[in-house]
Every structure is written in structure tokens, then in C-alpha cells.
Length: 259
Picture (cartoon, rainbow, N blue to C red):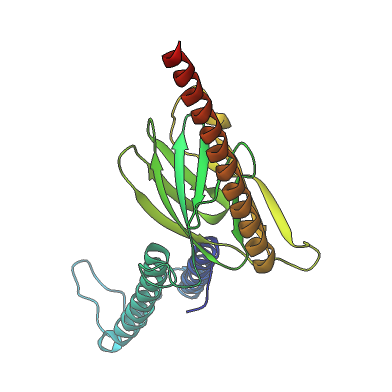
């Protein structure tokens, strides 16, 4: 099954239902108007017209052939539509790989706190809504593991029809797929405030938003490597500073002991 976004799936289901509903409505209304015109009461009954009397059962109808044909066709259409829709809903629920992120998918841990989002990648790189937001590659399934550090939040990507509860001490897993970049987009596209909180979580709830940056695959890999290198360099500097502070404390303790 080709990689499709959740928004595309729901739009496809909506269009099919709308189209079939419109077609059925046109057929029913047209047939009703046709029969209303055909059997209209244009003039009073004649003396030789066989008019049914009160309580008389109707006759004819050719054994209900039209009824059975229409019922059979309706049943086939409805069952086919139900099975087709159910297949796509399973795709939405389980993801392109079926409850498995797959080798080509990207996994991101999302953490909500009043009133911002933090995004952690598999190599340890972290970003937040206060700086770069969520950075992801194009045309890729993104699996998010959502939780919270304080109160209930709800991670949502409206354009992708994505919503997952962010509850302290619990994890909620969902996914969405990014669209391929189009010609003229360059190597990245930024969707401002693409992520929102859908749970009333406090005074700053309406500002709990984050950008989504969609990059070309190569650009994303370069960005991830650069962020990892910068993180490691920062950790080394922190360790060196801690070691220097530790040496100073040891010297101070030695001087205090000599005194």
C-alpha cells in the first residue's frame, strides 16, 4: 500500500461518500419525479377504469423483481463501501507498516509541559517549540511517542488529522506522514504553528504551539548530524567545566586542611 497521509485518506473517504450519496440522491429524486409525473391525476376516472376499492390487495408487480434487484445492488454497494472504508481506517489506525514503524520511518519522543513541546530523536538530539520545533524529513512516516511532565495535554497536527493524549506517566503512540516537497520549495518548508495543544491545560494553552520543518532527506540527515555533533561538543565542554570546578574545590579543601 502506498504511503499516504492521514489527511489524504480521510479526504478520499469523504469524496467517495459524497459522490455516492449525491448519485443515489439524484437517482431516487429523479425516479420519484418520473413516477409522480407518469401517474399524475390529470382527469377524473372513467367508467371502465378498474379502480381498486378500499381493503383490496394490490396485484401485479411481476413478483417483486424490481424490489429484489434494487435490494441486491444496494447490498453489494453498501458492503463494498464498508469493506473499503474499513481497510483504510485500519491503515490510519496501525500505520503504513501495520503497528510497526518500519525501517524507513522516523521515531520521535514528544513531551508536553506547560506550555511548550520538546522533541527527542533516536540519536539523542532534542529540540523544542521555543527554538526549531519539530524537524522531519519529507515523504516519511513519522511515529510519535507522546507523554507529559505535568498536566494533561493533547498533541495535535490539524493539517494531518493527528491527535494523541499527553498524560503524565503514560505514553500514547500515533503517526503521520509528511508530503514530498514540491518544485520551488527549496530544501525545506516550515509550517508555522503546525502543532497545537488540544487539551485545555492552563492559562498558556492557546500559545502551546510549535512549528514543523519538513526537509529533504539529505538535508535532514545533515541537520541531524550537525545537531548531534553540537550536542556532543556541549557535553564535552560541560564535563571539562565540571572537572575544572572539581579541581578548584579540591585545591580549596587542601588549602583549608593545611591551614
